[in-house]
Image 1 (cartoon, rainbow, N blue to C red):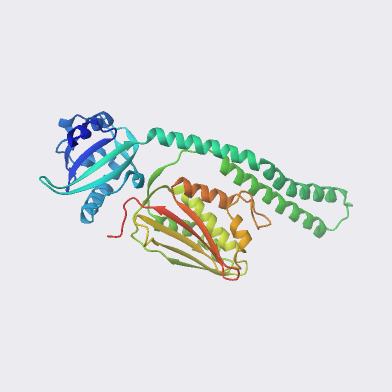
Image 2: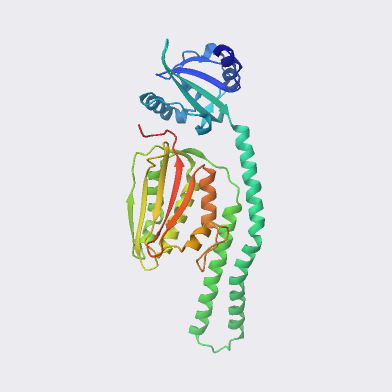
Length: 356
């Protein structure tokens, strides 16, 4: 099929732009997708099709792309947002093909696909998966709640059966035990509610190092109180990731809290970030501790639903953390050796691949 026929008949929106980001050519699908006519778009900056909040980022993207041009397949594309003529925004996936040395200079062909329907199907699938998982561990939650409730009941019975002249110290000991077990039950319920709660996610560019700063500002003092030393080795100026910042903060808080709990007598907690050298367009964030480590059998199960080595743990934290990272199309892995501590590494795709 000749190029012109393919260009017009393509099922995805195709836009040809020059090195300054000016639109030179579009196909009919682009007109239908964005609501602009060909006459309205030709000669305009491509930022016209980008939400206002992302335009500066996109201009930098265009500049950096032509500094180190490359073809990027749709399967490895970046999920972004686009803007229609009527102001409506929608999620898209974009692939770029570099065309150097044409009669019109160095060009890039952008193939744009509206992924609204696909994301809706994925959300429905994740919701069904979550509901299925909730049913799977409902019995486990009931069991976890039953233990502290039994302690509370038995201690209350002891207090009620005590003579009226029982010393206050004995009563206080039982009350402390009751309070401790009530807190444990409350934590289990809280984790369960977090897991089952449905909320609208806010996907936006997130600076991972700034996220680390915010979380450490929030819980850093609490961690240091028990003699834990916090060290950071953050790359700074990393490309942002498209993410739900609140969800990633929850993951990081969980990893930091686990690392802190792994060092009951103090130790060193290290947070490191950087680009992954052999994976263009990916960054990593690692939380490492100097605790006793995780044995090989435990390491295999550390992300399993309801698995925990803590007496007050619910077994939901790491399982939920991995799910959140996977929903961001990332990876969360654990590494450990007994006696040498443990480390948990998050890997996420950046908005703009670096490594020029």
